[in-house]
Amino acid sequence: MSDQSGTGTLGLSDTVALHIQGCVFENLPPNVVEVTKQSLLNAIGVSLAASGLAPEVRSFADLACLSTANEEASILGFGGKASAASAAFVNGAMAHAVDYEDSFDLNPCHPNASLVPAALAVAEAKGGVSGRDFLTAMAVGSDLVCRMGLSLRQTMEESGWYPPPILGAFGAVTATAKLLGLTAEQIKDAFSLTLCQATCSGEIKYSARTEIRAVREAFPAQAAVISAQLAARGLAGFETPLEGKAGFFRLYVDGQYDPETLLHSLGAKFYGEDVSFKPWPSCRGTHAFVEACLNLRQEHGFHWTDIEKVLLIGGDVHAMLVEPREQKVAPATAIDAKFSLPFTVATALSFGSITLDSFTPSALRDEATLSLADKVFFQLREEWGRDKAASAEVEIQLRSRRKLRRSVDFALGHPGNPMSQEQLIEKFVDCAARAVRSVTRGKAVDIAERLLGLENEQDMAELMAHISPRMSRKI
Image 1 (tube, rainbow, N blue to C red):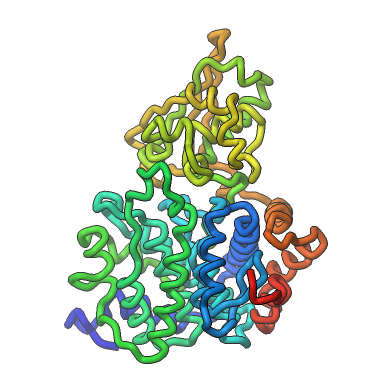
Image 2: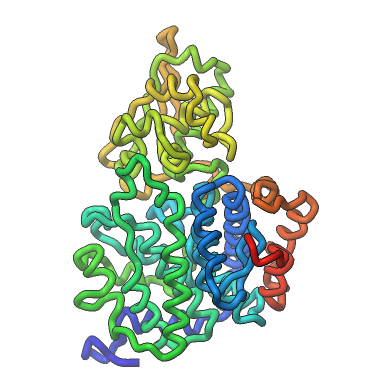
């Protein structure tokens, strides 16, 4: 590898690429393996649910049908097959569509959302990829997304970007490059090609009618597959795609990052083990507030009509979930409702739960929910940083003038307040039942058991055939 610094030490891109190339399953700590399997189970489940519940993903599946490319990878939920890039495109569209995927609370991002669709497509198309190799690719990719996010010393939003799918693209291409057995030099080429495609405008947060926020992971998932495939075919990229004069960190945060944070304990610590799993299908930033409200409702037994005002206290990462107020109090789309603190909190207080059925067209028009959402207000706690994304304080004032307060340090699903494996399996079963081609409980449990024992699988293509049986070409 080339020495870009002139000091006898490798540059950042070279160091990262060599780490990715050299990592093997035996390098993974046992807890990393276990959480990575749970992340895969979760990712496949929420994509199956999206195939049946998110109408906006249908156009991606229809577009895949127009392709004349080889049918080499499965489209989850629908049952058809397409080229690896097209399958990643469709499955990527479903990965976030019901907003139920895992998240990294320390620097809010979704390290496996675009990674899993891309990796599944490449593994199935290649054939002969073992469960151990797949878990290794997932672990190094997820870890890199988290490390890149943690290293930022300026938010990407300051320059008008929307971080999750941009950061996620580099985890996804890490996994696909690893699965294709690329050299360190080729991994840098794949990073370079991804840099030419990874983009997402912050306007996604401000449009009341957009559905792009729901399907955003389609684009980095497809880019990851194409980038790795081109790199494997010898297309040369940049010498320093990460730290270069116009590399990732210069483009997205004006060079404001800490390489030591990115490289600290690289290969020993895998941040994918610190992801949180969602008990409720909404933005992770809503969860601590939802949990606090559900606890208060259960503990004190009040009715939603007893509520005069709800005050939510949180950090700047929560502010986007309450602004603009008119849009968040009465969201027009399901994905906007999932990114609304007034709507999710009002739903929890009105019904005592939040489920996949809480964001249907009729639920978005529910008079009780909308009436209560209008009574929800937000107070900024400026000292709270982004590491407090899973924290909240709630104050509910009843008509009797009684005030109820509750704080949550780590919302349910956080490693410090985890969901059990049994809960994750039940979540998978519920999601799988909602697919376009509904999966029975018995088969869903069987799939879950195989995914949770993935290190014993010899060929991911055979497993995918079991998860998504071959149907007719028409989706």
